Image (cartoon, rainbow, N blue to C red; front, side, top):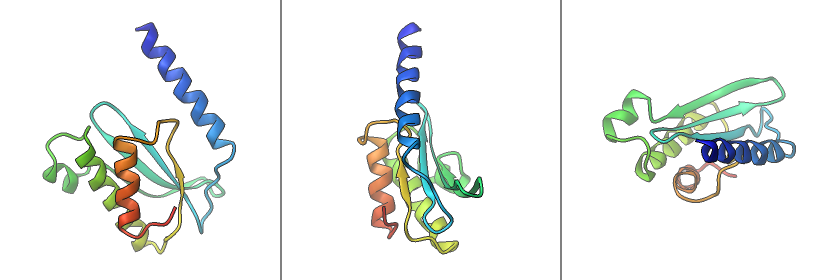
Length: 122
């Protein structure tokens, strides 16, 4: 239990350090990613206005129908594809990627590559 708490604290510290440099604007919002053991979540955030412009997660009905389990790379790819579609609908092409203190591999990498493949520029 204590090891998990320490792991969480280290991730939070990394995230805060990164957030000091990354700021989302209306023209180039921040693509924030969070992963739990069972799901993947992401949001497009305008930090200047303090608003979420779009969001996607493995809990959405259309994604849940395609994938049985939300905690794997295949589901992260679908979330990346969905957030790119949502961004295109509201006229956003460029974003700043905020990996949330996680290493850039696995589900985080799959989500980012899928969003890039669907014409979202980092």
